Length: 325
Image 1: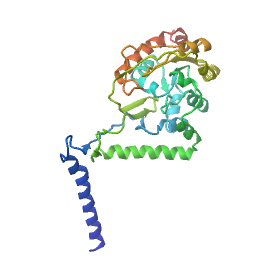
Image 2 (image 1 turned 120 degrees about the horizontal axis):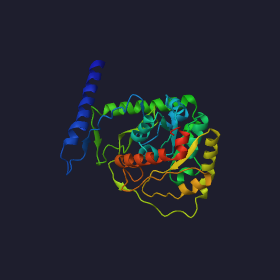
Image 3 (image 1 turned 180 degrees about the horizontal axis):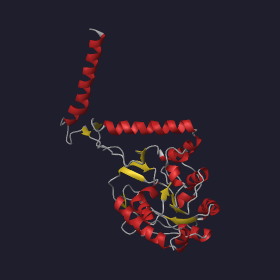
Image 4 (image 1 turned 45 degrees about the vertical axis):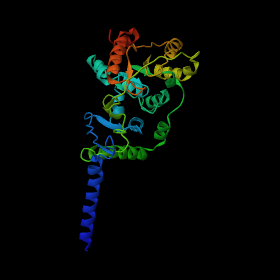
């Protein structure tokens, strides 16, 4: 057998084997429920010309894009009148469709540098200082945890990358997702244990506004709840005070708020408001549901965002700072 014939035979054998494993076997009624079964991952369309893929449940590439200024995100952040900081609950709870759009109607630009991986205020402070961001108002959202010291392991790794390493990691992960998402438009994915698509969230991130645009969100519905308050929130004050002092030096107003989750505590808001002399907003949590126990589902998030915005633009200090009077 010639080399050409050998290669052709190998190709035909591979194609036949692949067809058997990926197409025929999943359709055999081996047991009740016909396991293993084929799961066709839907094509996750791009979320706009200004959106970058950033996560399907693992590393969040927005840390790299923001810290190492890959793409135009920081360029837009520098032009923001209103800057939102916090963790993933900001991204899923204070939605772009409300906050960014309502700001635009007033001739203002809102941008969020909120990131996932349970990062806290320290990473936002690093971004503000590194890129010399000078918004007029900063909205800091989160539970008491957000105002404790520290960085996520992923944030520390990103901050230790050099420019070459950051670009390499960013473009490798982006390309891998592009191939994976396009591949499953045509080839089924085997799911032997009824686990489903395997990605509870798939995030793109707008370079123009900083918001996540989700190609996939979990279908769960879990009500938010309030937990008993701690005796003291003094541990949140040092980092919150550092943030306030940094923003004072930049002429920015700090506004505190929170997006609820499964075990929400809110006592740090009036405490920090009193200690720092800054306003806070507490939207209604009535009827709020999370998609996964931690992040608001879409309809709840839209209602919360609308309530927050109404209270936000009604604050006298905000109206003065944003020249809304």
